[in-house]
Length: 241
Ligand code: FPP
Image (cartoon, rainbow, N blue to C red; front, side, top):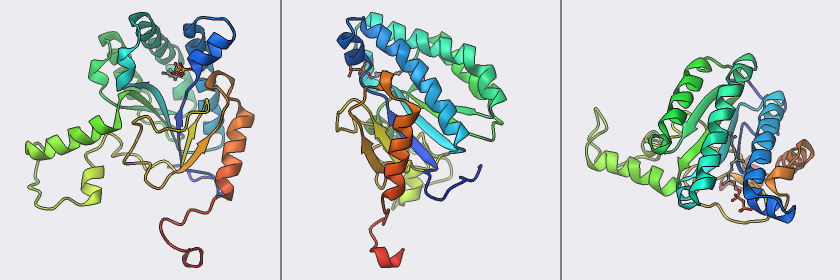
């Protein structure tokens, strides 16, 4: 893991990229145009976070509830994802980015699953940023899957009487990653929307009214500045830190 250059920078940023549809509608454009611009902004942020030597970035790209959107919109999002991974694989490799996913990716179209597997393989040895896309992801589902694995004795070598916190963490999709230090949500919504509910227990939350398609490096810098001013006490008092 690459160390952060400044102690006040987060090691892991998670982002709920919200507001694509409203941004497009306000401009009299189809929602799909919002998603297209949203992917461009996602790429800009991946580059910015990597340049800052922050080692983990998780982007909420498609929730398990997003399957309920009109088919045309789901197809567009899947198409954008496939296109992004196919065309940016080389760039990720060159920039030391390791690509991973969380969520129920078996529900994604097969062509998308294939390019995900390929991108993970190609970038597996990336030593800079770990980019994690949440795809067909829902936190309650993730936790339920872990619990059901235990109940059906699917965890090799274990017979739990009492479960410890780290043992549950190890059964989540995020087992290889540290918990996020900073969560950013755009578009003026103040919810977690079933995103990383277990992992965000001590995370600093940052909400902005900016719509995702307009989120810029300056907005990221503002979020990081706000984060650096917060005192993370993890339940202790200031004097104990
Ligand atoms: C929320 O906006 C956004 C999504 C449901 C999709 C987010 C996905 C992207 C930005 C693409 C990311 C893809 C890659 C490849 C990184 P919304 O549609 O809910 O907006 P609204 O709340 O204004 O309707």
